[in-house]
Every structure is written in C-alpha cells, then in structure tokens.
Image 1 (cartoon, rainbow, N blue to C red):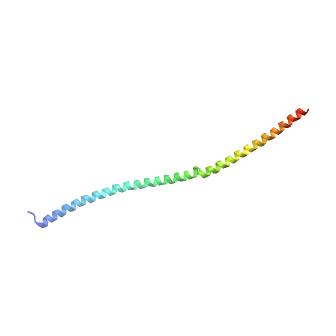
Image 2 (spheres, helix red, strand yellow):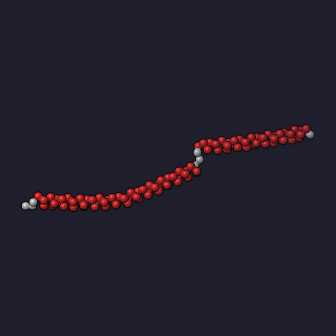
Image 3 (cartoon, one colour):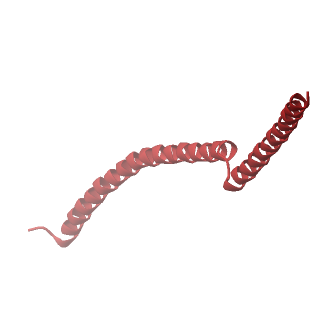
Length: 107
C-alpha cells in the first residue's frame, strides 16, 4: 500500500498535470479568439467608415423636402411669368389684327 505522503504527491501531480493541460487549451483558445476578434474589429471599422461615407454622400447628393419645395415654387413663378408674357404678346397681336381689320373695312 501507498503511504499517505505518496498518495498526496500522486494526486497533486495528477491535478497539476490536468490543470496544465486545461490551461494550455484555454491559452490556445484565447489566441484563436484573439485573431477572430481582431478580424471582427477591422470589419466593423470598415463598415463604420463605409456608413459614414454613405451618409456624407447622401447628404451632399439627395435633395431635402424643403429644398425641393423651394425649387418647385421658384419654377412655378418662372412658368407663371412666361405665361403672363405670352398673354401680353397675344393681346398685342389681337390689337394689331383688330386695327388692320378696322382699316380694311374703312377703305
């Protein structure tokens, strides 16, 4: 039979050996996870940069509702101005033709 100190030594050695194996596996897992974490951080950084770039481009490119309303109002005023000028020209032409027709009926 084994004496008590020998049993304690063997149990301690077995425990230490088991702990050493577990610890080495944990460290391997941490190293593998560290690489994945770095890759995920880089990817999220690129996504954040892409999103910021898109937001800037969208803000520069796309029109706002207020801007569109202002442009529409300006275009409508310009169209109304052209319409008024056409009406004025039409009235002038009507007067010219009326004067010609009244001259021809006199003579």
